Image (cartoon, rainbow, N blue to C red; front, side):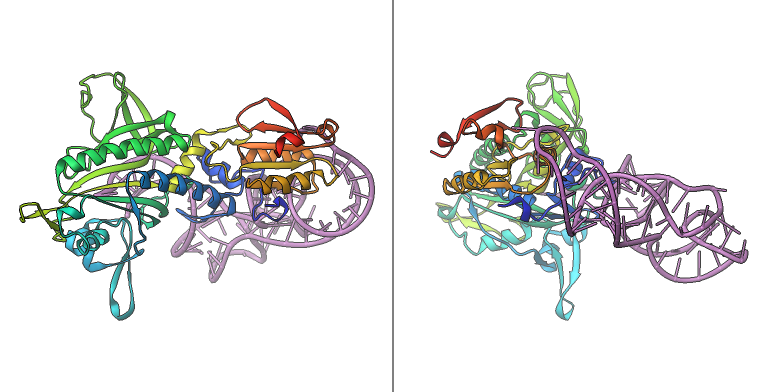
Length: 403
RNA sequence: CGGGGUAUAGUGUAACGGCUAGCACGAGUCCUUUGGGAGGAUUUAGUCUCGGUUCGAAUCCGAGUACCCCGACCA
């Protein structure tokens, strides 16, 4: 990609109203643009990062047997009435279609996936089953805030699991905790993310949230000083439910993922049953597992940055390499072609502007690896290679670079 | 949804009720520059909307709209 044609414009100034670091940096570097309160456009750079996150999540979920599908955003009122959530779910966006038919924009998809699963699940042989999608969700939050950390429309991975027994649900649930840890590790936030006990487990006592420590977060968690498991303030148990320790560290955090054991909460209203080995009808048990992708992206920026800009973890970097030309010749262009032939995704700064501006923008954008071509490096038939997160740069011979 | 605040050019900002609404960045053209947001010349572009007060409104008043913050809410 030639940077001269990339759809973006970097800003020296942060948007007036930006409070969080991620909002400021992502806007300044041209990843996102606010359309209205809690509604954001993802520009080419931002979309590339979102796609990277999507790829990581898809890979980890499929590793544990998840099958991807795509459910509609437009969901009929009747389904929500069956669970009582047409009225109980305050944040539902409701709208009328032809002939006065009413819909909700999908805020979550238990009401859609459960009756769908009923069309396929008949026997214990059809279980377990793991279905997921990565799709836009709509929630009419009374108050959106902190850039892409809390929005009204957001890309979400929602996974639903279907089981024939409690043991099977428990075992898959544990596997998902590990999957989530791998996902957050690859997205560069594992070191600050805590497994957190939270309310809302309709079937089990607690649900689990994955809370990433940041001042930009809106949740308060108490991290157990002994076992490291956290609990959401909303629980406020005196003793750690895991290890009975009573010393906690209070932290502000943002919820980057959550998992629930739904049990029969949604299978009952939709009559989701299966025939067991002995031929008797039993209720399917469900779990659900969510991750907000945009929020995850914002969270990663929230902790992966410095004074100059974003420092993407390698797997989220919008491009593999930021190639920066500081000389007049055609060498950089040739190197660009060679890197592309090698299969690398390269952002090539071919613009005729000052070196300082190019370097400053490169730091702001935060691509994980930077290669500079200049008279200085060419004298040694080399280029300069530098990781965004490190101070040290090394000279690499051009012939070694492309072999 | 309760409370508070803000609205001036693409962005960030300045202007006592009174002169042609100023500055920086950006963008366009030309020249010079090119390893840390370059210099000169020149051009471009603005008072959220509607109404009111006033000789005169960016400024005061009212309504609307939008955005931000605090709280509540958040399967």
